[in-house]
Amino acid sequence: MGERAKPQPIVLPEAPGWLSPVAVPNLKTGMDARVALARTYTALALANGRLGEGRDWYAGVRAGVAGSKSQ
Image 1: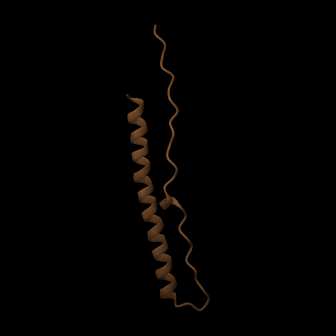
Image 2 (image 1 turned 180 degrees about the vertical axis):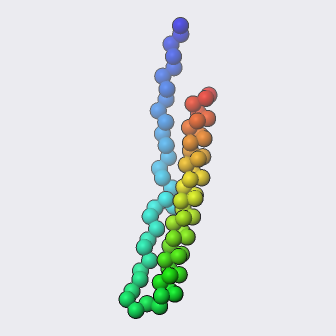
Image 3 (image 1 turned 180 degrees about the horizontal axis):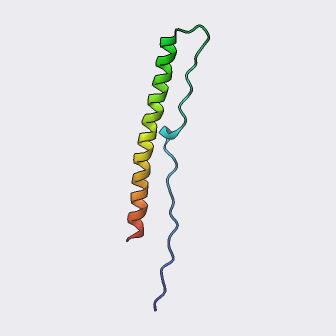
């Protein structure tokens, strides 16, 4: 039996900047509730968008790792 090739280490890229936390909106006492709600909704939409992008990015990384193992 021949020698089996030693697996090469997998080096994953750094996490993209868009995976950083979304800032909590600055809300103040006495602020119009509609403004506070709009700021909160905007932050939540941004965070959820980043989560979706993160899932897509991870799927690509995972597919790349799976593809490199089969070669």
